[in-house]
Image 1 (cartoon, rainbow, N blue to C red):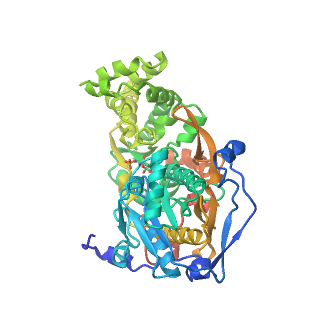
Image 2: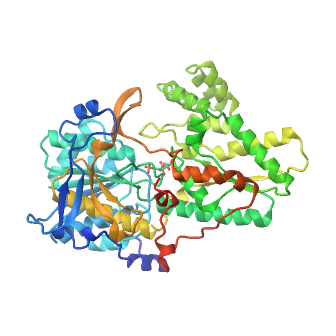
Image 3: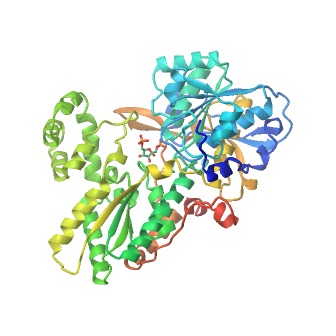
Length: 548
Ligand code: FBP
């Protein structure tokens, strides 16, 4: 436990998260109401077949009322995947929730993510430990990991662990893949008649775990506000120094929600939205041409500076690179040792080329060597390309510089700096929104456990309105499932939410971007405010405000 607390940490430790009215009086005063049976978002017959025990469960809402069956609860919590501000508050919500039912309740935290659950590596959460992490960023209280729960042997170990600790519930706090794992585990536990609820909580800074029922994932608010502050600062520097273009890659593995949100907050000269790139089948060349056009037009107005935002996942949405990555994922299988033994990138490429079509081999060889090397790196345990390691911002600078040079206009001075804002935002102090939202999600998970509900994801809705109007409850995870092709197999997975090109947020951006490219319409959001006028301290994201 770190006792070297800054003044802000001390002050934030005292912050009491605001909770929806139904959760205000603890677990003894929350009853549930159940809606109609539900269906999955797609592939209903197949999902029903794969989740016979948990499919069709109703949406659950909470109401204030007296609970008859109040008992101590034991819950295990797991943090899964990338850090997101608000994670410690989910644990605090679970902790305070079960303690409000009985002071004999226990919470244990599994260490290092799902592997901690499988290997029974855990820590008892005490008052002192919990108090040290209330409203703090990061996941360092228990750590996180990306181990995929998929094998029967892992599930069996989870059962042994649940029985050993007499757990009433296990709460898996994660993104779409982790919540999918939670749903599969819930189904397995029911089939094996293990009376321990398995619940999910929507976490990810990427903002892509949302739908009609889950309005946002926690972490998106703080991360996008942190990046917006940094982008605003750079815009001011660019407008002051008037000598650099700044190419800024923003985290967000697949979807461009973060890029779009930051663009709405800061109004930069350029922002790519990967979903649009894919929808329009845009090539890398066309992106470079467009950027070079903007650089040139601004230079002719005497503005040899600007700011361009690039979503982290871009390369996977450019059709020719997407096809290349798909082929690489197969071509890399079985030749890892041979590739690792090669000392040069050219040597590695020569090996992998044997498994590529002529077109993809040509795309690979057209990329700078550093990018080739990054594309050949190992995939994460869920099979994802590690896009945070691919330096798309440098690639674009290199290609735009070459294009500008080829055009030969001496008025255009293209000097560019690259930035990647990713890890800077994932562990920031949670905004009030994420502190409140995470806490409410955790408490909701405790209520679901109290009611023996399994295979649910904690859900808090009406997030656009103040916390007093928030509605807490649970959504059956099977409702969010569809079948997708993963590693050559059809798998049930929670649908990832990409940017809706017909949504208000994207439309606002699309309407204004041409003006933003020419003028300096920069906005400077400044740092997250924790205190002071609510319009500042409790501001929600543009994405949420616009209902996207
Ligand atoms: P989750 O989907 O697990 O929330 O992680 C999101 C993320 O922060 C992405 O934005 C990023 O591409 C990735 O994690 C980075 O992964 P790692 O934590 O392994 O560096």
